[in-house]
Length: 267
Length: 266
Picture 1 (tube, one colour):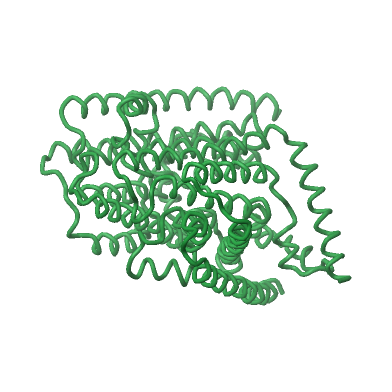
Picture 2 (tube, chains in turn red, cyan):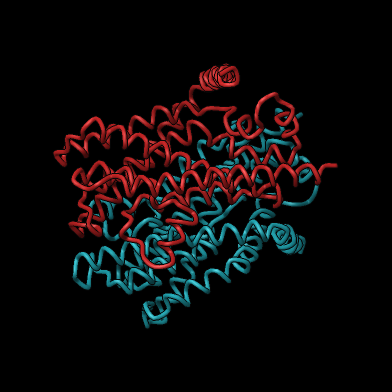
């Protein structure tokens, strides 16, 4: 309990610092919101163009795919609000040796490195995603039960965990490879897979990105839960929970190995 | 020539980062794979051979040519390096020497692209081998010539736009927000997500007048055989015009920025 309170206090401090920072650079803050919204709108336009030429993608109708893309947006934005900036900074910390400061803090180093800075603009854009999902649910005539909403939120949290683990793994590569500018690109390339219905993917490609780098399940499980109220939600949820836990455990092991590498490189 | 030195310098510099490149190239395949699976599902669900004038074969060819073109002509780190040179004052060292910095950067650009492509060729070749039986190319030699030249122009246009964005570092401390805004426009409007001629006529007309489609979509569409006759020549003329304009604008911005730099740098 004591530890939890300590982490809570530290986190509140991080939050306060981020707020001050964002309000110091207001124009930048607003521009980022606009950029994020533009990306989201771009994806919806793409969908609109696709559905000019078809009525379904695999077994998904247009508004069902909107739920999927909106859910992807929500997960991405929550992840970015909480962790993104910190993880993109990690290679720089490693290169310049500033990581040392984090290792000396009286908290877990993975926690400190992952959560120091919050992206408050992404909080705003998360709600844009929520609004679009709500609109699509309305168009589909869905009235989700409280339980369904709870499970949906749970699945979103698991999705954020998967995003975190993937980006964390990519950022940790910087302990071994000099330059990792490709990592942001890698993150976007990988998570973009979860924008499309799972049933689209086949063969080895589908297997790899469902089980080994588990991005496909991320938005698909919650979106399916919401759009197919008659299906049992549990099989999908269990799968997602399993891959999320494995991914998080993997990130922990990787961090240990990375710190060993860091220690042996600097001494 | 001193600028050919720049080229070989660029080759050496980029070779250091071959692991970074290989990782990037591998990740670059992922969205292409996703696009191919998405379209395969779409053609299957539709049960017809054509979507917006594209057969499945043409669609596969479009994304494969796009992938190769992306590797050849998209500047990866040039704008960040130029901006860093300006911000951190390394530019001063160049100004003392008989070297024209923009020309120097222009020479570095193709060298880094060639090294990048040399590294990326392995994973791309594997993908091409996997979809080989689906690829269809137009037979006319003319389209290959125009497509090739157009690809070169696309590279130049991309470089000049990146260069312009980088010169903003003369005036602004932080340019990444602006770079990402332009990048998002490029992403959607240069045909990376889908062939632009699937859009309704109004938007197709709009994108004809904007520079973005000439950064990628246009040469790819030519090489896939989507553009013929007057459409081909009008587009080609537009691409040349935008490339020249971007070139002049980047020179002008550079001259302005340099004056600002020298005035404040003392």
